[in-house]
Image (cartoon, rainbow, N blue to C red; front, side, top):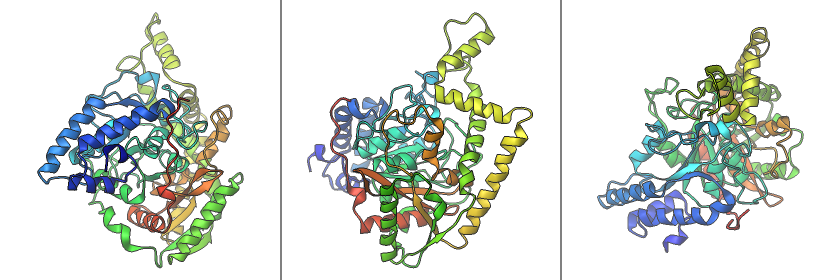
Length: 492
């Protein structure tokens, strides 16, 4: 196979070529970099492209392969979302506030991938500080959906999802606070997995909402997701919220099929405003699962309608606290025009943060303020507990839940920017998993109006093996995950 033909392969297919000498990591990496050069003028999935570092890592990977010491990800070109710290490589969170900031350490997940010999080709674009559902909030400009350059890729991990979908890398890591891995994966026609809270270390992830954030993989299929999750899952003493115990070998869970598994379909996830094409694709996917031997039954989660309100109180509250550190003194942007300390602090934050980040800081500060803490933040935490209990109860009856990932397909740029509430509704199917800390995965399940539809599976704590098993069985019976967008090579 010619190196220029490899950028659409799965990790497993690339691994086989690398191991049998059909291609070198340097050739694979050059092919990915060439692909980036072709499509970036239109897709804009990267904030930073790390050409020299990637080729250096690829040469080391080839040496490792020649010695017979290759790990599953050795020599595989990857991308990391630009809120994951990388030593010596800028980490900007797509914000003016961190423009030019270069960390002195690697996030734990980055180090684990480097330990396997994975090759970093660059950092992925995102909504500023991961706050958004469309990647329109990036200070570096929006990422475009490779299926339709006039539409959003989802967010906040829009860059990672678009990069994987357009063949610019073989996998990426995103972060998911309220759906920011799964929703863009759905809109771009790839696979996105949010692990159980604490399964993958958050050390080195720039914090948005610390009780909700989780790092996870974006890949072309579920089997690739299992390989990447194997690499990044595990206890980390640097993260006080990291789960203890040995993680599962997720790749070994894939081939058990779904015979006899109980899959619930909560009616509340088919919300008002769900695109008819989305609902049709999801319903057809459920028929496929039944044909494979799964027991699919409708169920109810009555508290689901409250999840979005709970999320948009807790997440901004935690964001307002986490983002207080950006004051123009320690690192990042500092206004050049202030005459004193307090003016410098005010102007730095006015000029450094974009509108959506400011909106969420103000919402959070209000919810935490004297006189409103009990009415908003404390009440939201109580409802959060009720939502967790409701999900725990339903998982006593079902092995997993199946829902749409997003109620709509990718929407046009600008359609929701003037209506934040409508934008927030993009997360209605994904936020409950973050509130409860449970795992969720989105897989491609068809097309509506020529655009990808995502099917979401949710499971109880540490049920990633079951979710990957269901997703893989579905993908063995369908070919939606093999679809690729037409080459997006024209400047937008």
